[in-house]
Image (tube, rainbow, N blue to C red; front, side, top):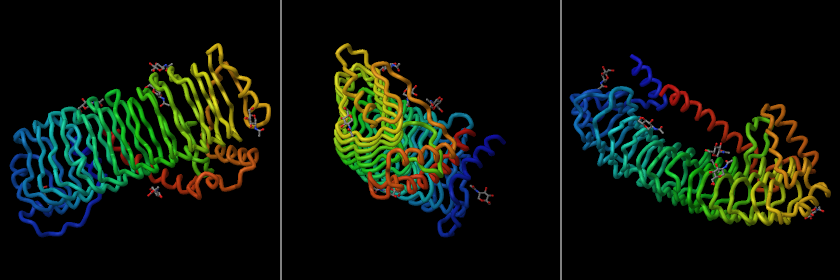
Length: 433
Ligand SMILES: *[C@@H]1O[C@H](CO)[C@@H](O)[C@H](O)[C@H]1NC(C)=O
Ligand SMILES: *[C@@H]1O[C@H](CO)[C@@H](O)[C@H](O)[C@H]1NC(C)=O
Ligand SMILES: *[C@@H]1O[C@H](CO)[C@@H](O)[C@H](O)[C@H]1NC(C)=O
Ligand SMILES: *[C@@H]1O[C@H](CO)[C@@H](O)[C@H](O)[C@H]1NC(C)=O
Ligand SMILES: *[C@@H]1O[C@H](CO)[C@@H](O)[C@H](O)[C@H]1NC(C)=O
Ligand SMILES: *[C@@H]1O[C@H](CO)[C@@H](O)[C@H](O)[C@H]1NC(C)=O
C-alpha cells in the first residue's frame, strides 16, 4: 500500500504519452508496463518499443541479470525506485535501447553493479541514486542529449565522463564515495547548476567547454579545469578542496544581480573556503561580483589579486595569512570590506585608502575580521537594497548591462524560477523517499 503511493508519487514525475499500438505483445502498449514478477519480465522482454513507462518493482524471482534484449525505445520513463526488499539483480541490461523519452530513474537497487545500455543517446533526465554497488553505467558516457538532469548520487562509480552532452539543466554529483574523475568535455551550458558534494575527497573536475553555469558548487575537488567559463550567474563556490590553484581565465562576472521580483536568500557570490592546499588564484578577467566575495581559511594562499575587478555589490571578506592583497581597478564595494590577517608583516593601510576615498560604502575592518552581515531575504528588502545600491553607485538602471549585455537579472530569475519549481517537484518525491 505504502509502496503503491510512493510509486505513484514518483511516477507522476514523468509525463505520459499516448500509447501508439504497434509492438507485440500488448503489454508493450500499456501506458504503464509494471514489472513485478519474473513472468511479467519475460513478457516485457519481447517488447521492442514500449508505449508508456516501464516501472520495475521488487520480485523475489528475478535472475541476477535483468535484460531487455529487444528494447529500442521507451516513449515514457524507465523507472524503478525500490521500496521493498532488496532487488537481487546485479546487472541491468538493454543493449539496443537508444531513446527514453522521459526519465531513466533507478534508485535503491543495492546489489546493482552494472547498467549496460551501450547505445542509449537520448533521454529527458537521468537520475541514478542510492545504488551503492554500482561500478559501471556506460550510458552516462554515450548520452548525446538530455533535456533536464544529469544526476548521479550515491554510487561506487570511479569516473563519470561524457564527451557529447552540450547542455543540461541540473548536473548534480553527490555522495559517490569512489569517484576520482568528473569530465563533461562537451558541456557548454548548465542552466541551473553544476554541483559536486560529499564525493570521495579529491575529485578531478574537467569542464573544458563550459561557458555558462547558473550555480557552480564544488566541494572536495582536487583540480578544476574551466578555461572557457565566462559567466556564473548565481554563485561560484569552492569549499573543502585540495586544489592547489583555481584559474578562471575568461570569467567576467559572478553572481545574480538583485532582482526585485525575487529574494536573495544568501550572500554567496564568489566564495573560496577551507582549501588548505590552495596556493594561487587567477581571475584575470573578472570585472564584477554581485553579492559577496569571500576568501577564507585557505592556509597556503599568500597573494590575493583581482586585477580587473571593478564592482562588488555585496561585501568583501578575506581571512587568512596572506602577504598581499591587490585590487587595482576596484571602484565600488556596496557592503563592508573585512580583512582578517594575523601575519605580522601585513599592512592594512593600503586598503584603508579604499575606505577613505569612498570606494567602500560599509565598514572597513582590518586586521580584525568582522563577520559579513547576513542579507535580508524578503522581496521588499531586496528591492530596497537594489535601489539603494543604484543610487549610491550611480549605476545605470539596467544593472546587468555593464558586465554583459542583457544577461542579468530578468533572464536569470526566470530561469532560476522555473528551475526552482522544478526542484520542488523533485524534492516532493525525495521527501517521500
Ligand atoms: C496493462 O494494462 C492493463 C489495463 O490497464 C492492466 O490490467 C495490466 O496490469 C497492465 N499490465 C502490466 C504488465 O502493467
Ligand atoms: C546510499 O544508498 C544506500 C542504499 O539505499 C543507503 O543505505 C545509504 O544510506 C545511502 N548513503 C548516502 C550517503 O545517502
Ligand atoms: C545557456 O542556456 C540558457 C537557457 O537555455 C540560455 O538562455 C543561454 O543563452 C545559454 N548560454 C550560452 C552561453 O549558451
Ligand atoms: C563548506 O563546507 C563546510 C563543511 O562541510 C560546511 O559546514 C559549510 O557550510 C560549507 N560552506 C558553504 C558556503 O557551503
Ligand atoms: C579550515 O580548513 C581546513 C582544511 O584546510 C579544515 O580542516 C578546517 O576545519 C577549516 N577550519 C574551519 C574553522 O572551518
Ligand atoms: C581609492 O583608494 C585606493 C587605495 O588607496 C586606490 O587604489 C584607488 O585608486 C582610489 N580610488 C579613487 C577613485 O581615488
